Image (tube, rainbow, N blue to C red; front, side):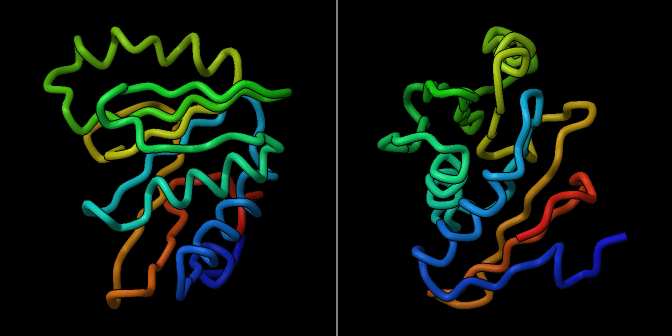
Length: 145
C-alpha cells in the first residue's frame, strides 16, 4: 500500500503543479478516468496541462468550460472534459465518455459532479494563495506524484 506521502503532493507554484501532473500523466493507460475536484482557480487546468505533457502530447491545453470536451490527439488521446455547466445525467451521457475511454484517457474538471465506476479522484486544495495540495483519492495504487 502506498504511503500518504506518495498519495499527496504539496506544490508551491503553477510550474510545480504542472510537473506533478507530468509525472502522473506518464503513468496513465487507455481507459483511465480522473475526476478532478477543486474550487474555481485551484489549478485543475494547470494540472491537466502537465498530465498532457506526461502523456507525450504537445498540446496547448486550455480550459474546456465553454466547449465541454477538448480532445488532444496522440499515441494515447486525452479527452479534457468540464462538467461545471451541465445539469443532469442526461447531458453528461451525451458527452460519450464511454467512447472516449475506449480511445484513451479522460480527465474531468468538476469531477465531484460525476459518479463513474472505477474513476480515480484527485482533490486539489489551496492551503495558501500560491500553494496547492494534490491528493490522489480512489486512485490505483500504482499512481504516485
